[in-house]
Length: 344
Ligand code: CP3
Picture 1 (cartoon, protein in one colour):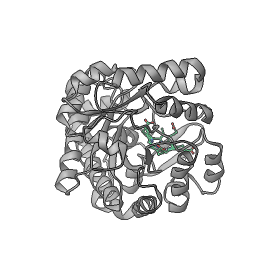
Picture 2: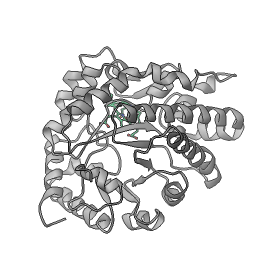
Picture 3: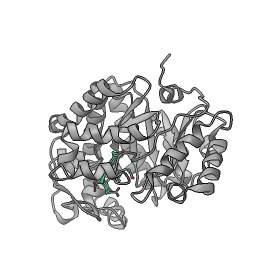
């Protein structure tokens, strides 16, 4: 049996207290991150420099007793590897050249992505050699719709134009989703080949989709990623995180082929438990704002999450990424609350 607590839970086991990691645990709330970031030319260069990326992964692990490390990279390396221009505007977020501005949509071949992303797999290899035996190494990618929306509209925010494009240019949007799904499967498989123990698919923009569109742009492309991954011989567990999917999380958990379900802030644990297949591991879902508030609110909130998810296999996490304003001491406090003996 594995000595990695998180892998035991992903296999359907219950571990008390539950394993814990924090979405976006490497990054801007840590002062030492900024020092490291200053050494790279730009954010993508940071992601493609294994020495810097490994260090970014290790920073939170030195401070906190976490069960998992997550590769330092970004979901937008896929559009970059497909030849679409990607850049990051400080304080605003990512920017891409929008496909919506183009009459004929063009992007590179999904077969080329793993060559372009070779430095990312080198980071995974180095991490595999560095991490303690008990630490689970998580590889990741964005969900096809989330990545495609950045490619279509060129930025985050309001997704009305993307939804409209799905109705107005269905052949273009479906072809894009198929390319992104194939590229994503290859990218995830390469991370496992390099040493990742498990994978997470961040479908951050699952909200506000009518069910027929959810079927078309979320369920079908994600099922394609999972089928392709399994056809490539990858057996590693996959956590699907359809943030904002609401009433449709059950369909996501049952129909895509993911192993475990990431639960967002507003979804009740009991609802997720009822909707997911019996025995499926659930991950989540503390409000990241509680990590800023700290004190008694954090203590109460963390206990409520432990209690709500405690009836089945659970990986403790936030319901969305940690924010840059979070005091690192509050993360230490959270881990201490979770690990306190006999109270979970
Ligand atoms: O510890 C980790 O989780 C680090 C690895 C990681 C990053 N991005 C690094 C990063 C992961 C797993 C991601 C996922 C990601 N990237 C998602 C899905 C998760 C989510 O939060 O919904 C999305 C939508 C993106 C796209 C993206 N990349 C955005 C919106 C931004 C702007 C900053 C933000 O957090 O809103 C980025 C840049 C980015 N990716 C940073 C980091 C550490 C900040 C870059 C910097 O300015 O230094």
